[in-house]
Image (cartoon, rainbow, N blue to C red; front, side, top):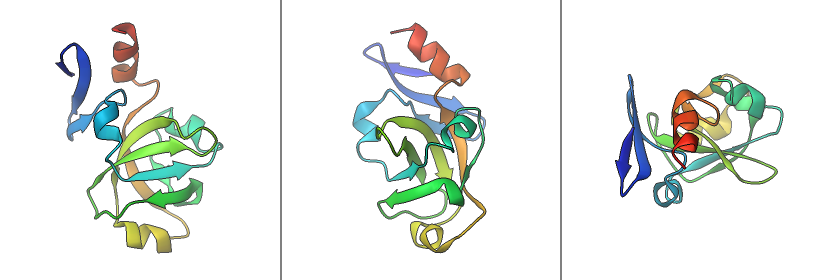
Length: 117
């Protein structure tokens, strides 16, 4: 975990460096996917993001892009993921894995971040 001025800036996982879910400045500029309420418990348990659970796609991106995952009801950030395909291809998909979950509400990083508040 990387802090700047005692605020969580980024986390490092085996697959790279990603913004923290509490890094509001960076979250504002990330492309995002909005998921239905049924997908949230799975995502917050570490599951990848499947296309049927995605209700909206905001922004244009390529495969490998870092995305913000938000819930449809409140628009709250619930995860950071890596796109498995471009935004254009994701729009056209009906099923399958759309993004790989790398950081989510309830994971070890989240728990550590909330304890430091």
